Length: 339
Image (cartoon, rainbow, N blue to C red):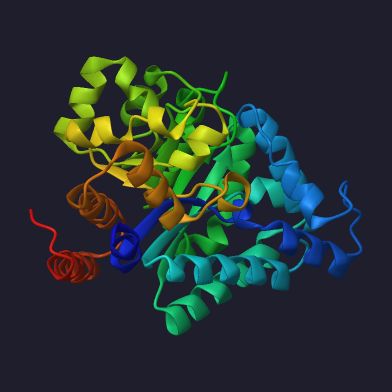
């Protein structure tokens, strides 16, 4: 019954890298479309390469896979395919990360990828009932100057972008490196989020909160190493967009049973469940819910709470949130979930 409950609950997905939704089958299809030579001779061989030992080993393959994205149709096809998978999992709202620098470095500009993604988002809302917002992420292994130039390049598309974020390899790239860029983004009226506390230490979470003024922490699972920080996150109800299958795949936790999601939830933090890069990490959002329910013996009430957290932590408007939260209550009542 829990699986039916997971799929029935309206959910928001708040930590999804659209380039990380490129399934191997689509990689081969787009490579064939553009005559791109791949390092693997079959879909199975490519999928077998998704055996990562840390974040950087994943990123190396991730950036190589994104090279098949060449024109507007590619970005449309990728985004539309993700939205279909999300809708099947009960996602009603998604806040999608995209990495402009991954594409502009290859000569693929905003005038190529933005129209494709935006057309897919419009079709996804009309045809699938999934609303979506875009979050522009800066690659933290590149310079702050490069990030600022990317923000400049995005200005013609300002109205289509909800927030800015910070992703890629954490080690050696603290949030403080990007303080000026985030200051400017906020001055432009953009919301802010940042990856912190996955590879990086709890101090990176504190920097993201205090220097970048972020509204959410993406990942954040290492917060437990700092008791005062855990208390702050609970007190201020700072959402954590946790990605369980990703954490296990990248060896942040050795096994799903070792994940601290349940601990964080029980300590009163606003924890959410998301899929990160689902094509690479073995599952979309419902798969992540199921994996945690099985490994950590989450109760149905905790599953419902995670869904509620995802809605309240989103950047959707208050009317939409109220509507989805009421629907969650209706689903919980139908499944006999108390509390």
